[in-house]
Image (cartoon, rainbow, N blue to C red; front, side):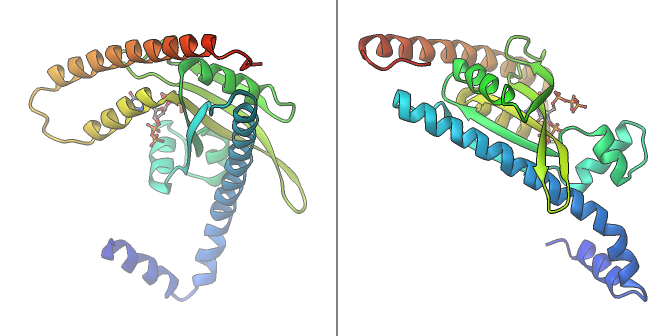
Length: 229
Ligand code: 0O2
């Protein structure tokens, strides 16, 4: 627990007018609630697609789904990087990844299948697609990123929210997790060698993903009657 941060927060609430502070915080907490609702909507849609696919094809294309709301610190830093004021209005206007969902698929072709089925649903609008699988980042990062617009139904309004969906295979996720951890390691002695090694690992992982997919195709050919729609 960060005692200093807690102390400051309590200090504010114990100040003469805590209601003023809470009033200022209210629009932010409300917006975060709305993003959580949007995540629930997208997660449910993915689970429905997974259930149906599993019933028809006897396997799950989606291994895991992870959701997260960007932390206030990360939101603030990103808005500052974009050179705009840190306001609740600008959070909605300039950020598309406050609500994030990571979908870990078994195989690469599952990624494209599930992404297509999700984004073509009639209450969803695909805003942008960044395909870092077909066009990996120079460091070897692979993932399919979609920014979706999805409505949430509140008591008095229907509100459109943006959600970032990242699709990866298990292998791509394994690589990205390690890469993420290493990014926070300070004083790495030979960063160039580490970067080269990571790139090499990314290539090995890609090769492995392709082979695993081929093995699945070989197995499926032998199983008559299991046909993917
Ligand atoms: P976190 O903690 O995951 O939220 P934009 O969002 O479009 O203004 P940006 O940030 O360049 O611009 O978008 P990009 O590169 O399409 O996607 C950013 C997110 O993808 C990152 O979020 C990571 O989750 C992931 N990502 C992108 N590149 C890498 C990479 O090289 N390694 C790893 N491990 N993940 C990557 P955040 O905001 O950085 O963090």
